[in-house]
Length: 426
Image (tube, rainbow, N blue to C red):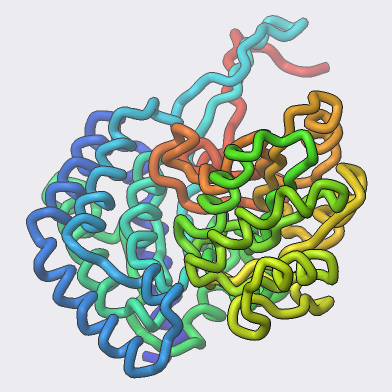
C-alpha cells in the first residue's frame, strides 16, 4: 500500500469512529479524557524514553536549542500534558449547546445547536505535547482526529498516540478516534490535505513554511495558526519597572514559542532613559540586539560589544520571527508610528503596549490588528490555558471562524433543528 492510500484508509477509519464519538455522552467523553490522562502518567517512562531517542537524533542533526526545548519531554512536562487533559474535563461540553431558540411566524420551533465538526486533522512539527492536546480537545468536542506530527518527534508521538488510543478503547469508544500517521514520508502530509469530504478541517501548527504550504495546497478547509512576530511598544509615559519586567518576560521566558516578543519599540524621545536597563538585562540574558541607528548608539554608549551583544538592524529584522535569543530594537516617534510599524510587519498574533496615558492606550488597542492586544502585560499570556480555555489546539491569526487561542468551541459547528406540527409551505 502506498503512502496516499495508507493515509486515506487511516482517515476513513477516523471518519467511522467520529460517528460514535459524536454520539457519546458528556460523561463517557470525560471518562475517556481521565483515562487518557492516567495513561500518560502510567506510561511516562516509556514516553520519556522514546523522547530521549528523538532528542539524541535531533542533537546529532544540529537542531537549534529553541526547537530542542519544544521537543523535550521530562516527567514534569508529561504530567502537565495529563493535567491539561484533566482541565478539559472541568470545562462545559461544547456539544449540544443551544445558541438560538425561537418560534417562527408559522409555528415552527427552531433551535440552532452546536455539533462536532467530525474529523479534525492536525499537522505539527517538533512539539509532542500537541499530540495529547489535540487529541483531548478533539475528543471533548466529539470529534475524531488524525494527527500528523513532525519527524523530529516521531518516536514520542507514536508512543503518546498509542497510549491515548488505548485509553479510548478501554472506555468503550473506538480506538480509531485517535489516529496517528507514523510514517516520516513527507508525502503523507500532502495526501492528508487531499481528503476533502473525509477530513472536515486541517489545522497546521508549526513554522511559516508549513503553514503556508497547507494554506496554498490543501483541499481541506484550513484554520491558519500563525507565526508570531510579536512586538512590545514602550511609550514615554510607561511605568519604568513595568516596562522592564514585561519586555524581559515577553522575550526571555521561552524563546521558542510563538507568543515571544521579537521586536521592541520605544519612543525615541524617551529612549535614552528607557532603553539602557532593558538592553543591559537583555544582553545579560544572552539576547543579541538588532538595533536601529538610535538604539545602536545607546548600546554603544552603554559599553555593549558590537557584533557580540548588538548588531545593526537590517530591513529583514523587522519581519523576522527569531524563535531564539535575538530581538529587533527600534525607536519610533510615538504611538501612531508604533501602530503603523506593527501593522506593517507583525503577523497579527500578539502585540503589547506599556503606557500610562489612556489616550495612547486606546489608540494602540483600537489601532493594532492582531488576535490579542495587551495593555501593560506580557505577550506570554496568549495561551489557551492562560485564557481559561484549557489545552489549546492552536492560536489562529485569521479572521474567519476563529481568532486567537482556540480550543473546544472552534471544533464545533451548528445545525438547525426545526420542529413542527404538520406545517407545509405554500
